[in-house]
Image (tube, rainbow, N blue to C red; front, side, top):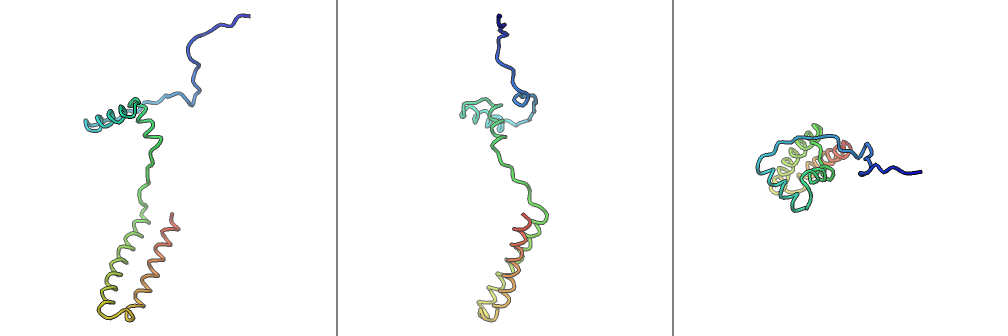
Length: 117
């Protein structure tokens, strides 16, 4: 029995085929940067973009809750500065309770941030 050779490379599996095209508009500076980086890496521009996509890490935006916590901490930081100023004038023993109250509130906000993710 004779085997018929069809020639060529074996067909790629469905998941290995590159079936999608994405068009991206770049300005001159971006294009030159892409071209230079791909040349320095010794790969094509397409391969450079593929590797950039697969290796990049995108961080999500801050949630509204986290923004609220940050604003609270900022205000508490201002209060802490005022307490420190007052402690220099009146002495630490007179401002100690204010400081402890504020430190407790700061700890609560930090704990809320940890719990929210």
